Image (cartoon, rainbow, N blue to C red):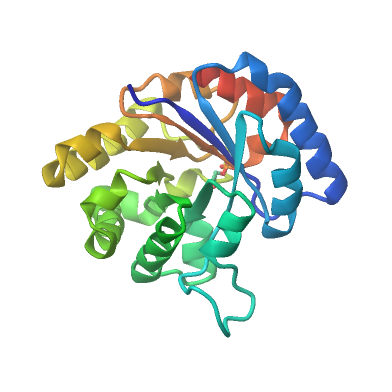
Length: 250
Ligand code: 13P
């Protein structure tokens, strides 16, 4: 019922040449993936290239952030309207790297969520705890706080038009993946928390796992009942690895 989504987060990687090679490689393998949606979230400057190469294909493209403002004197920012004009289907919102290095607070993340949706760009709301928070038994409280901030500003109905990504910060780029059971536990928590507000939204929204997901561990993570896909960092930069993760999903 929930169609899996595998999304690559390229982060700040790539050159004009490598982007073309990577996308060409993905396009040549995408026809074998029938039962999953596939997307790549690329650095802003590569969005026009992605739009050109991916238009009319089964691979969607998106951005890794978005401004909370509409337009104006916000040097360095890129608006949701601009992303829409270049065909972005998704924008990552509240990735842990944005939260920790650039100070994106829960409130700012919620405003970005609203800004994306206003222009028809689907926000991929990233949530997840730090290692210290997990060790202190705070995982659910942290995830709840991050979700609640978005629900407070956007409303529960808006969550149905979004994607949630659970990314335990200690698993990002570390090679240390959450076990399938650890992932499932938090994913179920997220779905139950949403269900308390609106059962239909909770059933329909896709909750992706992110954090050192790779071709070797994807199948087991994706087989968990509340894991509806993956948000892939490092492994999304390698054609074969990313395609194999997509195959594991469908
Ligand atoms: P890695 O897959 O490199 O751990 O990154 C995960 C991530 O941050 C995706 O947004």
